[in-house]
Image 1 (cartoon, one colour):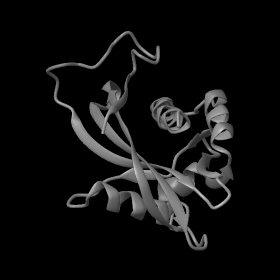
Image 2 (cartoon, rainbow, N blue to C red; image 1 turned 45 degrees about the vertical axis):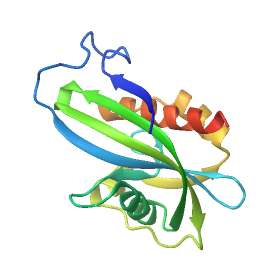
Image 3 (cartoon, rainbow, N blue to C red; image 1 turned 60 degrees about the horizontal axis):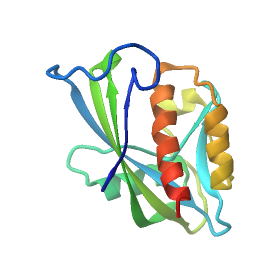
Image 4 (cartoon, rainbow, N blue to C red; image 1 turned 135 degrees about the horizontal axis):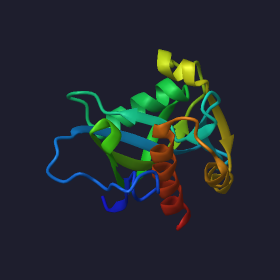
Length: 170
């Protein structure tokens, strides 16, 4: 997959520091979906507590492949199964504050079957996750206007916008 964007605190204007080469960082991998329903609407998770939108997806567990992680996360966060249509690309985040490098793999996927009960984790419930369905361009506009109420939200929005912009190129 091609690299769509490298994101750092410096690239977003949060600090003057870019990635800290030679430093020890923890590596986290995640999978994200441009998840479409039969109407062409895209799923987004609105985090009411922190006032921003994100794509469904999450971390890859030890021993899990990226595609299986995506399917698991969509089932948990949205409440449906999905079929992966194609890869979009990769983003790399250098979160100096947490000494974390996150590599996120983006995919286009379609929702399969009925939307059922979500299985949110305690942190997601606290964040006020709400699943919304709207046209991809609307999701992108909302993300461009979001003002995240927590530090990680800045990285999440930059990452998600890169995936949506790549999707909309087609």
